[in-house]
Amino acid sequence: MRAAIVMNLLAFVVMIPNVGGVQDKPARHVEKDGGFSIELPPNWTAQEFGGLKFKILVGPVVNGFGSNMVFMDESSTSNLKDYVAASKKALQAVIKDIKEISETEMQTAEGAACVRLVFEAEHQGIRLRQTVYCLDLAPGKKLAITCSTLADGGDKLDAVFEASAKSLRIEKK
Image 1: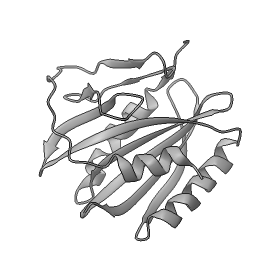
Image 2: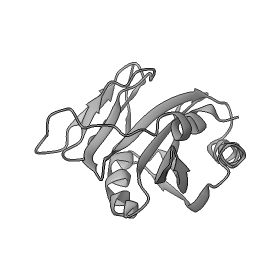
Image 3: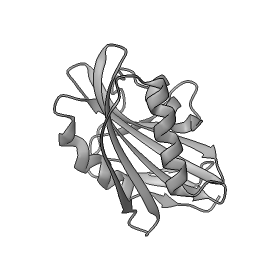
Image 4: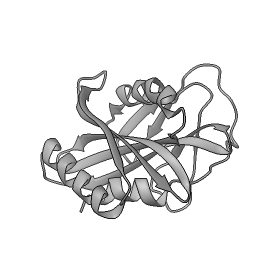
């Protein structure tokens, strides 16, 4: 089972207050131990979140919900296409009312292949739109970035999530 995506979608969908400062221009957040960096959307912050290996990115709170991006890496020798297919099966088995909206292939600004999945599902009584970006982080390692926002109007953040995902860089450890 593809633990990274399932864990991102199930365990870390929470109402997160934006307790950090506000930035005027995008900043690059570096996860040195993870081997990647990503540009934060304007007015978003990187925050520690208990139990997670990497910091999460949190946006302004709207209607009581802080849209967020959660990063999880996972060991996998599967090619990206097979990894995504297996992950989708695992999600459908665990989340009964999940509705797939789209699956598209894209590339980061540095040319890394990436698959973008968009779903809607109910979590903890809240209907969410979640976009998951899956890519190869290193040989035998995948990275899943799960971007969560309220389903109602959630498509308004598609460009924000995609700009950040495209800005992802693989860094030397």
